[in-house]
Structure formats: structure tokens, C-alpha cells
Amino acid sequence: MAAAEVRHRTVEVASGVRLHVAEAGPEDGPAVLLVHGFPELWYSWRHQMRALAARGFRAVAPDLRGYGDSDAPPGRDSYTVLHLVGDLVALIADVGQPRVFVAAHDWGAAVAWQLCLLRPDLVTAFVALSVEYHPRNPSEEPRTNPQGRVRGRPLHLLLPGEQQPFNPFSEFLYDAGRTMKLLRSPSN
Image 1: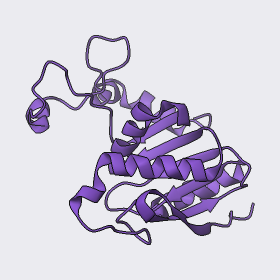
Image 2: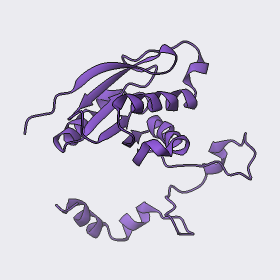
Image 3: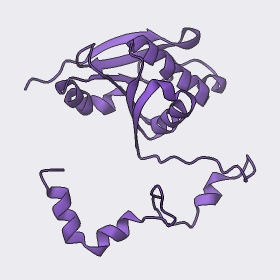
Image 4: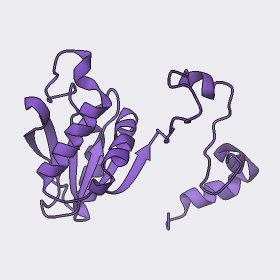
């Protein structure tokens, strides 16, 4: 199978800011928006873009504002989460599909969580890599130090519907041989 060609273009989003966008796959395929982390670029997604394109998806990977070949407006006030989410909303509109799949890594995942909260109408499904969702607890003061909340806690995931933390490491250590067999299974 030949590698999918990656196309490059520029999209004007908010206030004249231009984003560099890399794309692969058919333009009429279901769109998958790939949002990079810090300090990355669209290039971080190059292997996934080719794999998605080979399966008929339109992979769309921008350089976020301030990164790579995208514009870098001056001043910290140009880089709020609302600006970054606005850029993604404008990019989705440019793609010309009412809803997109979103996969995001690191800082990009934090931005994409906000996209999902503010514009759920634009997102079919979301995959977050390396950043889990941390809603602010309404009973906390808004300026609570988030590091203080996690300091001293074990690394864990809270599974939906469960009252106790799930520690993936304990599952691995419980039966490491079984875990490795599952990971090597060709059906995964």
C-alpha cells in the first residue's frame, strides 16, 4: 500500500491569524482533527495521518497558533484557551463537515477537552492522549493550587460508575504474564 500524500495549506481563523494545516486522505472522507501537544507540531501525527488516510478518513493536523508555520500573534492575551478553541472551531468550519472526530495529545488534549465542553455539537468522538479530564470541583475556591490536589495521590484512573480508583499498575502486577499475552494478541 502506498503512503498517503500529505497536503499542506493555510487556513485563516480568528482575527486574521493563519494556521498551517497538514492533511491526508480523501477530502470527502470523515474528518479526524489531530491536535498536537507541547512542544510539538502537526508532524507528530504523520504516522497516524497516513494510517487514517489509508482507511478512508480525512486526517487534519494543524500547527496550533504560535507553533511551526502558523502565525504567532504577540502577547499572552492571544493564547487563551478560548482563542485556541476558537481556532479549532474555525478550522472545523473550514473542513466543511458538521462534525469531526478529534484525537489530541498533551496540551492539545487540554484544549480539545474544552472544545468538547464548549462545542459538543461539532465533535463526534474524542480521544485524549496523556491528559485525563479534570473538572474543577465546584466546592473549591477557584484559585486552588491544582498541584496541591494531586500531590501525594497514586497515579490512577477513576472508571465510570466505580467508587474506587483503578490503578492500572496493580492490574499489570497482579498477573504480568497474562497482561503481556493480551498485549501481544493479534486481535488487539
